[in-house]
Length: 130
Image (tube, rainbow, N blue to C red; front, side, top):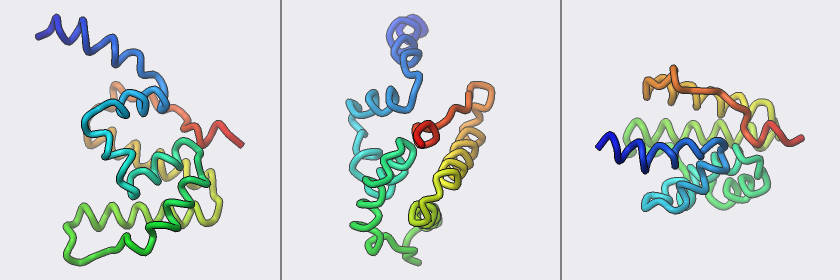
């Protein structure tokens, strides 16, 4: 198994050095729909990529369908609140605020996965445009 990981998996993973590389890799995965077909996740991807017009279109098309439904579990309601916070910053065209929010979420994920020693914070494409 170690040989297979070193020979097959690690070379592929080492080739992923940007968000675009990651999205290209994931787009061919069986679970690609999690990032590309679910509007409440795709809007986050679009913001990170700096595709703010696409993110606004998703917001406008789906905002009324996203709701803080009491019947949903805690994680679903938390996801809704995160998307609403992102949408508020998107509405204000607050690029630094959007980037700060994405970095905050990134740091939380890194802590939850216990991969701090592997994490190298990098700017999102959103931050590289201006």
